[in-house]
Length: 353
Image 1 (tube, rainbow, N blue to C red):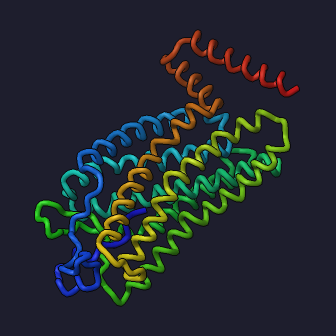
Image 2 (cartoon, rainbow, N blue to C red):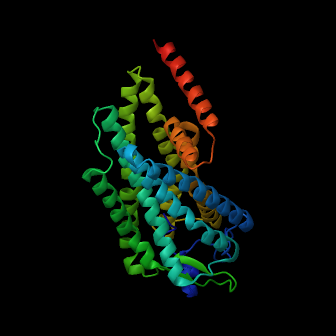
Image 3 (cartoon, rainbow, N blue to C red):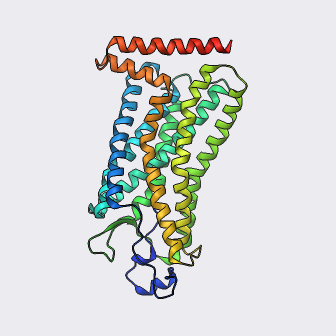
């Protein structure tokens, strides 16, 4: 979810400065420059996340698509989730350049990449909600969508991407290439300067936050809370392993994206003058917090494949099988790994009996 609107100090009319915080001594408007991360450090971080996200999510899509005949409904949702993370990661090289040199790609790419990034993030959270419902039905209700190619899964995935695209339209429309007082640094920002529509704009953004983040988060909390209660009363270790990776994916999403969404809402209220900021120091701390939480949020698109690889036993087995079919690993390695997995599973079952 993008930073909502251009701050008041980007307006060329000096009269608008009066609505923005002043220095603590009352001498004038806040300094236009808020020091956050080192631009070079941000650029390197974004590029590293781009590399890991592209490789990791690409592998997930490759493996699940290769096992077409054995895919479950959860596998399909996870594939779409990896695709959403992959799309999100593909926008990061542009933001890496922006962090170092400002926005140099023009208005068309500003709109396209902002819309793509926001749509992929909305799609990701909706798919996580779908996975939580799917796991709830499979474990708590003991039901499952029988075929991964069934109309329910197809319709759900199509609806997710449609709603995500619709929610991203306002950002894509309002974003444009903008200049600042620094002639060497342009920005890609939402151009919202009409005071008469300010309150409507704020309400729209809050509604998008609720629908696109907090409501799906509530669905996940209810579904996984019920699922964990059910697993607590069962001795089926296989079910516990099946749910572990999904819970880890959801927890990673909360840790990475919840702080950013909270700070983003605070920043929106400050910029819209619905919350008064008494000093430049307070304003600067909010902007630095936004910078910090944004980096944490962007890292998320590279986290899920790591969780699959280190927690998901099923995915590791599938990856080895596909790699073996492609001649990337030998039969001995596959047999050794499966033998160790089977022995550990057998010992676990013996401990439970």
